Length: 343
Image (tube, rainbow, N blue to C red; front, side, top):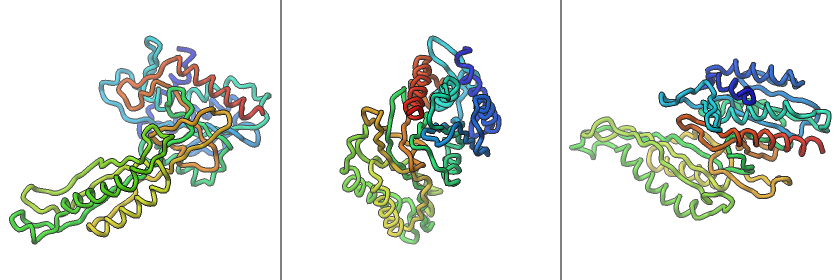
């Protein structure tokens, strides 16, 4: 296990909802300082650099999802039959540990340009960390690596995201006199019927073949309305999740939701908005993309690669990665460092 000490150390920190954010940030900072990195920003985020004129950056989020009781050893990395088990081992402390292991084995005297490492918080809930970095008007290096789990595949694009919470306001009345009320539930149903028609006729038909699912998807995650079976509903809330294959779809969705909100007496709030991207990078032979989205969609001004460990067991009970994948990822990161920074 000595070979995987960094990952074991990272897994020990309980970073569910950033509970031990300060501890993990201090650990990473001290580790990199010992390699000659300097601290540029340190709050709940950490930005560190080495060398001048940084052409390459790595970014990883330190928080994890919660676990359930069936998870055997969430905060103690275990090696079993070639697999490393622990909360965040895949998503994405494995990626962060591989970054740290990679840079600790680099001969910096051979590099002509510098690099920067970014560590964020709140990725699993609200993107607070990357939003803070972007809000600081950070100038990112030419190429950015995001350590989300990909089973060692280099992905250079992912879909966008727009999420809504929509509140319908009706007027309560007894079910025996429904004409005296306004049904928030029925307005929600009509809203969704119209929206589904718009989705199928205007969005789903426009394809982007570089995605495995080559069209924008729509999901109605929550419908919650009414207070009693014999009352006209005065309130109803729904949530919508669109994974967009084309950025122009975001504007179309926003316009349609606004139109239908006026028509059906609703108030729509955008909860999250992330742009899609597909980047071409000269040393990546084939463009591959993800249907999920990452912090990469929050930044601009850089070519982006998503590259991390596998198998992809993020958010699963007894989350794990293979030692083979981890070892390969360290070598992939080192190869990219030399390819980008030594030329």
